[in-house]
Length: 267
Image (tube, rainbow, N blue to C red):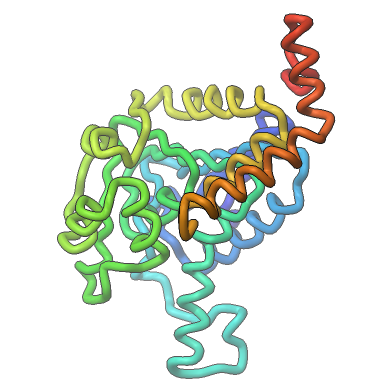
């Protein structure tokens, strides 16, 4: 059974769907393995410019599937005990930096519960839209482990601020789509039936920008989230602008503006 579905509504947009609806798309080990495979395929796909991440059925992802048999990751072959556990933990958690390293902009279309690891996956995305029925919760601390897991101690404070993130992580409380929009975790809330259309519309808007400009914008934003100083951030911006400015896309954009037409990459 395929646990990750990839649809291509247009050549430059991929919709990646977590597909275990009977378990609210909980992260089984098999799903994590397929997710890694899907990310590898997207990394190598130079025609795809935007990825929409969503869940099948009525949930985005309920987080780690606690009923799934625990087994070691492929990277833990030949290891036992804490060494195997650490490799397995790293294998699951590495989904977050892999999403952030994708050359494509990633939009989370959160269609229902996003708890624990599900919320962590949404937080790893570049943009987030929620349906009215979406529910959220960090929740790791509720199962007897640290509240900080799968990158959430890095991503969440950068989205909602340190104080709010600390409260959500330490209490593990549930919050709804309206609060998620109010605190800035999602940028927009829409009716359930409109979610994928809204995400696709946003993807189309992004694809109207030049391919190199869009890819470099994500790269700079991701890198400068942990820049040591404003000087370091500006240095990377300067480098990127010169690279973009000496490419053909800049010249095409300027010419299209002067001729009052759309650039060649706009479909």
